[in-house]
Each structure stands twice: as structure tokens, then as C-alpha cells.
Image (tube, rainbow, N blue to C red):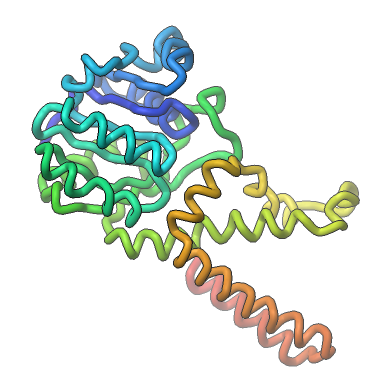
Length: 280
């Protein structure tokens, strides 16, 4: 098993900041922090969430690098940083798309002698930025790992053990393609539907008429549009396929409701209930 004594967090927003806080709270690792806005990194150091602000001179000291930047920013940062990393360093991104990342970083990792593993912690909040970072964000969450040609079994096992020690509830391995198909359904589609749902003219009058179902369906409409638009476009085909799928099902409901066909409507609702009961 590999030992990660020094961890560098690149990008101290909600995810990276929460990762830094979690590692500081639950391990004895030395935590370095890099952020595009240095003021945020200085604040994290002042708050005790990192041990040092990481300039390029410290990049080579990291055993593990975890990156919490947008997709293209992650690629750009890593392609620039990789020649400065020590051989055998492990790099994990936290971007919510994986084929985009692997296509652009796998060969560079091989060329520079570092281990790149695609990562995606299945956790978040409807807020962004370091101000909302918390050390319990990942408690019980699933951590997805996407192996690449630059990683091996020892690296994967070491990462799985390390992330479980941070409070994650489980780890999952999959291909980049499987990840992107599933995330299009479980995460990205939900954000698209929530954003579309809240645009009804009736939404302006919801006060006094809404309860749990409204709150559940609209919660993730409060999103970071700059980040999510980039994620959606990096996974455009898989997401568009899921949008087509839900439009088809919504059209079924619309047709039978307008036709007053209670038997078919009841069957559609029963099928939805039974599916939910079966899959959890």
C-alpha cells in the first residue's frame, strides 16, 4: 500500500475546500493548498485548514494531488504542473465528467511518470465556494474511481483505503464511459429538470401552495451555472440521450392525461412506483 504523507489540494472551492478540511480533521497528513485566488488559500491557512499555501516550488513534495477545479481548468493546471511533480505521485481529479478528463490527461501522466486516476466524490451542496466548505461533506458518500493506463492495482487499492478513512461510505470503480452515462442520469439530468421545472410562470406564486415535493424538485435549480454548463457540454451526448428519454416518458403522461385515460395513467404511475420500490 502507498502512503500519502503530503497531500496537495488544487482549487479550494466547495469540493476542494471540504476535502482539505476533511483531511486535516481525520488524518495526520501535511496538507498543501493551491487556489487561483491566493487570498482564499491564505485564509484556509489562517483557519488551519491547510498547512501551507502551495507555490510551484512545493508541487514536487506532494504524494497525492486532489484537484477541485472546473474541467478545462483541471486539464490546463495538470498539463502545466505534471513536469514539476515527483515521479510516482498520484493525481486524482474531482470533475463530474470522466471521458473528457482521461482523453486529455492519461498520456501526459504516462509521459511524466505520475499516476492519474479519474475521481468523482458523489457529494455536494446547492452552494459554491470555500465559505460553504465543511469537513463532513463526504460522510457516507460514494467515491468513484476511473482507472487509467497510468494507474495500477496498488494505486487503486491505496486510494480506496485512503478515501474510506476520510469518511466515505463506499468506493466504486468503473470505466469513463460507464461513469458518464450514469452521471448523466443520476446527477446532470436532475439539474436540467430542476432548472426547467422552476421556469413555470406558476413558480412566482408558489408561496403557500408548496411543500416537500416542490422543495425536493427545485433544490438543485440553485446551481453554479458556469460550472454546470461546462459539465453538461463535456458530456453532451450522454446527457442529451437522457433528456430525450425523459421527454418521451413525460409525453406519455401528457397524452393519457389529456385523453382522460385513467386506466393507462394508473398503469404508468404504478410502473413508476414499482420501479422506485425495486431499485431504491
